[in-house]
Amino acid sequence: MTQTKSERSVTINPGMLCQPIGAMQAVLGVHAAIPLVHGSQGCAAYPMRMFNRHFAEPVEIALSSLGEDAAVFGGADNLVKGVHALAARRHPELIAVITTCLSETIGDDIDGILRKIDLPVELVPMHTPSYVGSHVTGYDNAVKALVAQFAEQTGPTDKINITVGLLNPGDIRELKSMLEMMRVKANILTDISETLDAPLRLPRPSFPTGGTTLKEIADTANSLGSIALCKHAGGGAVTYLANKHKVPMILGASPIGVANTDAFLENVSQLVGRPVNEQLRRDRGRLIDAMIDVQFKIVQKKVAIFADPDVASGMARFVHELGMEPSIVATGTKSKEFVADVQAIASQTGHEIEILSECDLYGLHEAVKAAGVDLLMANTHGKSIADDEKIAFARIGFPVYDRVGYQRRAIIGYNGGINLVDLIANSILEHGDAS
Amino acid sequence: MDELGMQVIGAATTFGHTDDYEKIIERIGDGAIVIDNPNSVELKEMLVKYKPDLFISGLKEKFLAYKLGVPFVNGHAYENGPYAVYSGFVNFARDMDMTINHPAWKLIEGRT
Picture (tube, rainbow over the protein chains, first blue to last red):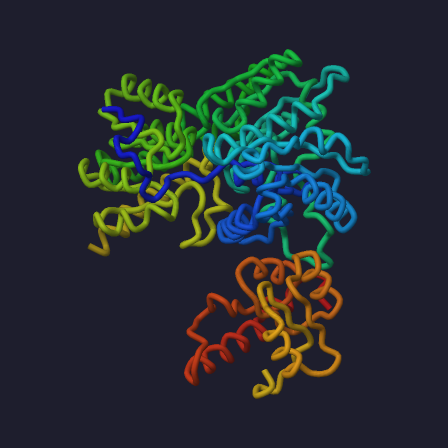
């Protein structure tokens, strides 16, 4: 059964965030870059709070601080003053101006305003009206804006491009480790592995070390190919590079679980012309060993998955590989592609899957109640649903702030799969202990 | 703070009005800094320049203080509160003691 849109005319407890927060996360993965949100106070305050709690890190987000006057007369003055103040006080290499529902509705000509500013800092406009799409769309638009502005053909390289999507620092570290094992050099868009998981050493640098450099973004036009780990969040940039700079593109499934990671590594291998190496095969074997070991603890359990589109569909396939039943696969973002992806999994695996796109938490709760699942996999907001239905709960996605360490643990790749096996099995075992 | 024998070297609010600042200035010692609506750049400058033994603020400032090696208590949402009334004051004093004397601060490379 597939339900792509709720029959209710109101949303109850939204299952998604708005575009600007996704764009902010993308910009926080660029070295010495500061997102400047062109909107009102809450447009920066609440995302900051969410980043703080999820990543346990300070984040720097600037704001043009639109008030009643700007809402009526336009926000150009605020924006110009904000860009100058930010450049003077922080000397960033890049200021990304992220629009909001307010500034898009006012109709400020952000591109025109930024073109007239002459400062020794790169300025990039990112159009992220909050009333269209979700945080996933915002991330996609942000990464696309970065490559559209900076990618420049200067001669072919032996690198590949990988857009990450809304994953965690732990995922990017796992990605880098896989690429290193295959001796593959990559432009990673964008790399939050150090900027949002910085070591505590003093003195603290003015900007966190790491992050994608502007040089790397420019170099994306010259790569052997581009792969989007999450096609909904990064696929836009990969498609742009293919159309504009003829960089071959691959928009596969997120590398979650065995088959999806196999496919990802096979794609990397094809692009660079080198085989998947022995160490990775050993990691693969270790994942399968872990899956076999826990089989009787988790087999045939019914699972509800609620996450961003690509994570949810990747997780659905992995849950199938674990011998469990993906009963409900839901995402807060509206996406026909997501529905098609999960339908394909359902027909290939023979599972009866209820697919929910543009799903709010109320709709998720109703579905969980009706299907009688054993395990809910969702972000922290799913906790109360699992508690109410007295079912096991495993945390994935963003935000997770009622337990620590999730930002550090990968879910992608073979090692991420091992982490997930442990997470899923332990949440079912702990639930059994408690009940 | 006075009652605990601690010295306040700076105070700030985001939404304080004139009467709030009158109270702050009346209670705070000479030479202390009072700032209205500081941003994180300014807070960082204060923490680096004056190296306080403790910073009390809210969640958005917490990880900034930590990353600069400054002990921190969340006075808005509490660490292990409540902090109000007599029994709460005991909680507050205990949380301040715990963070200031936490052994991990001494392990930070480059902290003076």
